[in-house]
Image (cartoon, rainbow, N blue to C red):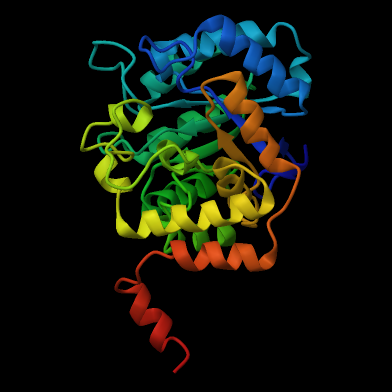
Length: 335
């Protein structure tokens, strides 16, 4: 397992980050506690040091499971990330990015994880009701008090990221070092605005849903809406809904992934994950496997490399359609 600096920081993280969103959920597609702990153990044994969770995942049970698994390992060897924003109760202050909610949520996350410090604390998405100054002052307090080491951002609009960082600069606090956004062969829209910003501002992009919610796993077929699996459970408004995945462009991507997988004797997920590895702005990829077998297959994507030609072929077949103003800027910026 290789290790990369996370954004413009000295923090080194493994290329694979273990995602734990479905650990402890109460449905047939979740990973039970015993299996999840075994997967965490296997991930660490493989050289992985970066584990991602959130307080909202399985109503806190994901953090609890991660905490139980960490008891068997040297805390200093690992980088633990969690998040704050979404509702954790029925009260009016049980959600958001207010000082009250962040401080309470951080304390609760530390308790569930069994830690004294969170290595990386993400703002899970923007809160339109709380002034960003209040949010950033609270993060500064957490860092200054030693409860949080680094901060990150997820699912903000680009102007919101920049506004938050400008406020942080005025407060004299450390910058975001990581950005967690959906990114895969079938979802490349962040390349228009976010990826250039991340490069310019020194944020490491840590993609979630790198397999397009399972679409890039190779188990789906054109014209056959799935009756089982993650995509079958997604409502129409979800990012990973079937109607967002079952498009002509995406089936062309599947064809190209199939071609490369067969030629290289690799699986579909290994090809899709390896494509992300080639992106310089990506220091680590969240691998959200449900079973030990899936995790083993996913981790096998990190010990080989696609050729430059293969990367270019995947780039071309998956390129998002040009839209304004990016099309205009591309065509006229050098005139």
